[in-house]
Length: 307
Ligand SMILES: O=P(O)(O)O[C@H]1O[C@H](CO)[C@@H](O)[C@H]1O
Image (cartoon, rainbow, N blue to C red; front, side, top):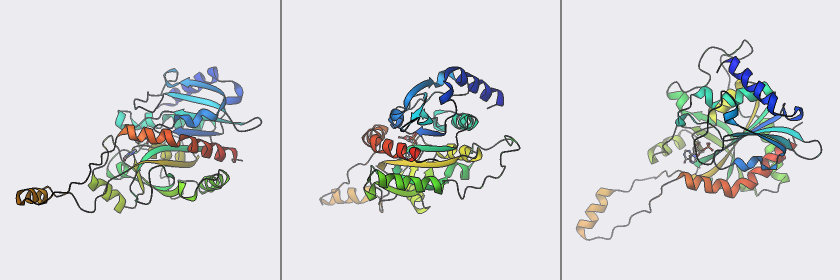
C-alpha cells in the first residue's frame, strides 16, 4: 500500500475524529466473535472501513467492518482505537491489506497493540474457554512459501530488513496481563501461556495436521494474527496477543479403523464407533460470545495499567 494511500486514510480520519481521539495510545484487534471488547469505550466515534481508502471489507461472520475510536478508563481516560473485524488472507485479501490497519495505527502513534483471536486447542491441557497469552508462534505459511507481509522493498530507512522475532511478544505487556488477571480475580486456570500456529485456512486442520502442529510445539492454532504481529513489530509497537480457545482440534492417537469395523460386522461382533467431532465457525462464535465479558475486563484492565 503506497504512502499516498496511507496519507489519504489519515486525512479522512483527521476530518472525522475530534482532536482528543486522533492519537490513540493503544489499539485492540477484535477476533472472531469478540467485537464487544470495544464496548467499554466512551465518547465513541465509529468509522466504517468503507470510509477509509486502503481498508478492505471483513467478509467473515463475527467480524464487523468498523474502526471504533474512544476513551477507556476513569478520569480523562486513555484514547484507544479498536478494529471491529479483521482481514484474513483466505478471504482473498492480499497481505498488504491484511496488515494495512496496523500501518495506519503506527502513523497515528499507537505504541501498544492487543491482538485477539479465536483459536483451536492443540494442547490437551487447554480446555475450551481458556484464554492463552501467546508467547511465541509458528508461521507455517512463512516457512512453507511466500506468505509474509514483510515481503517487498524496505518500507523506509527506519524499518529493519531482517526483523528479529525472539522478543515479538512483549514481556512487559504479558507481565501486565497476569497482574491484570490477578486484579480481576480470574481463576488461575482461566489464563494460560502458549505458542500460536498460524495456518492459512480456510479449511480447519485434518487430524494429522493437528498432530503435526502439536508435535512441532504449538498449543493453539488459528488463521490470523501473525501477519498483524509481524507488521506491528516492524513498526516498533509492543504486542500482546490473546487467543481464546473455542474448540479442541482432534488429534487421535489412533484412527478409527474402517477395516476393523467391517471385519467385526462380517464376523457378527459388536462395532463401537467413536462420536464424530467436527468443528464449525458457529461453535467458534458461540464461545466468543460466552467469554467476551471476561476478555473485555482483562483487556480494559491491561490498558488502564499502561504508563
Ligand atoms: O483468528 P480469528 O479472526 O479470531 O478467527 C478464527 O476463527 C475463524 C475460524 O472459525 C478463522 O478466521 C480463525 O482465524
